[in-house]
Image (cartoon, rainbow, N blue to C red; front, side, top):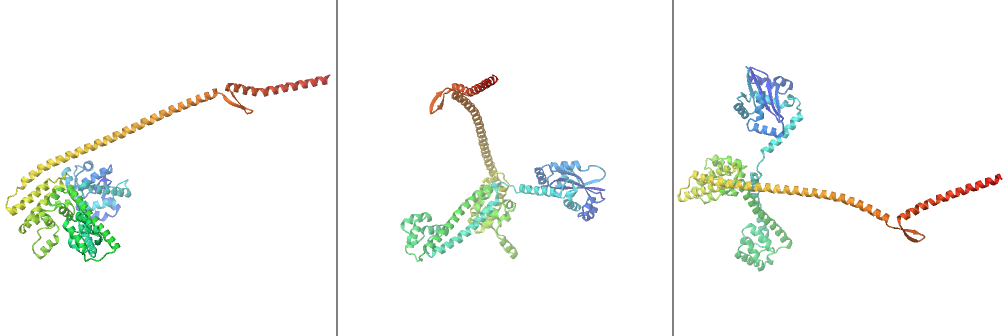
Length: 550
């Protein structure tokens, strides 16, 4: 009897499924195929043995990266060692969907691995019914886990050093070629348009950018004077041509031009000049980018040709994977297939023809030097692709080798051996890399110091603000107490100070105590009068009563 366990890697975690025991694995295939779409039938064949959920998204990403690279992660190893049945009379096998991961598991854990066939069908069914096979896992939660892990996995795969992004080089060289075509087309349009007014200028000034600048400066040829000769000479950089333009303007065969037409020509010329200026800036950008991404290839064959090779290959990594024979004819695919079809001579060079070495070589040596140059370009691209710190040391040494080989073809002087040159290059490159790393560490230390100082200044500023606020609060309390004391003192003083009393228009100054006594006396006087009136009334009543008795 064979006991088959199938490992399934999901975004939620690892799952181990036990398959029902059979005498031979091949007997399972028909049963699994018949039950894969039905959950009830599939549960009769497959049973969940163990499930290991990932603790975090980062852990899930690490495990899936390891699975994709065919490496056994520590979590997977622990999971299998814990849950796989060991020993016994029954022969246990582990089914794995990925053959690369199966080989790694067999090597590390010594397991009997099964891939393909029935295992693929079981994994297909498990993938379909996974959320119903694992308790507590809903279809929505499983899809969310897959979506989140898919995004994080894709982001991790496309992460790269932004300073060494070769796709920027591909876009730059494509834009450079497009700008060359556009500037050429627009310059021809300016020549044709302005040629109606000043046709002699076309033969004097050949460069497109210079022609547009000169046409914009001159404008109406009838207004051209000797005072403008210096400005024209600055553009053309030739005093004889500037004088020829001045002489031709005086005896030109061109037609007159209206001011509105001249404005449009000048505006279009300005656009063409700005495009040519932008092309120069783009070429400088391409040169600096090639120095960062592929310095050895740029030093060997030039920035523009190196960028064309990278663009045609698709990336620097693809170029590094090509053999030298492919690099040699890269860009001449049509000629190659045409030659193969017609059984003629195959092309000797493709894009590398634009390098200066092939142009300097004799006709009989062009094929030999192109083959040698392609070989060195392949070495340079591989060094650029896989080196951690980019330097141009190897590119300079490879360029010297091509120069020596070129002189060998012409003069017969034996070039240096490749082994000796590479030893020198490795020694120099190690020194340069050490120097670059030292500078980077120094820069990092300075950055950390600046950050530390900034944090210290911020903390001290916050401390000063706290102290000031505390002082302000204490001063406010003191001022409040002082104000209260002042108000009490003022009240006392007001009580002590004499007040002005008006009576019948006469102002009299009396002390406050006297005023109080007077007010009390004035309040007591009506009471005394009332008592006196009552006593007088009583006496009168008594007198009346006595008189009546008598």
